[in-house]
Image 1: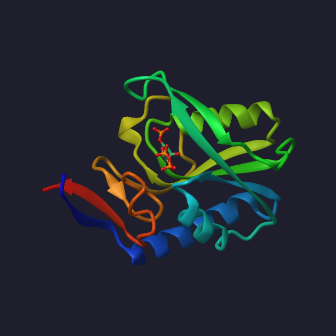
Image 2 (image 1 turned 60 degrees about the vertical axis):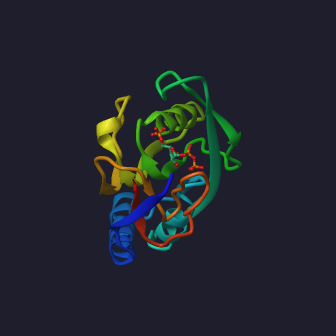
Length: 174
Ligand code: PRP
């Protein structure tokens, strides 16, 4: 099906907001060491930009999840297809997502990292799609609230396309 693409977040707005988020995160941790976790693939561009605006000692790590199960997202189970390598026991951990939608991916990660002994756990998400939330979960550092629409660009894909775009677009069927 053909789609048109409508800009919903410009490159300039992304740059401004990512810098602000970096300031908020820097102020929150005030110099404490932090493990910053990139949830692949969608967060890769946001993560790369964000870490350059956080001023605290950091360890970096990457995870990738997939979910299995049938039908709707409800009841799906998340599993690691790439687990972490850094030991989080006793450390402050910041999860970096491109989008928190139902919240199930983030909930899974919070649960696992809590069991592994993280001293604290926070979530930073470029987009917070809170109206579709299926679990009780708060995004601590949210870039942009978005209510609806299928968005691509700045890491986010449609069938693995459009991740490389430096702005965010809504895909609208023509
Ligand atoms: C997306 C996104 C989040 C998750 C959010 O990942 O990157 O990790 O979905 O959805 P949820 O809140 O409903 O769990 P996706 O599985 O599309 O993989 P990708 O990042 O590799 O595109």
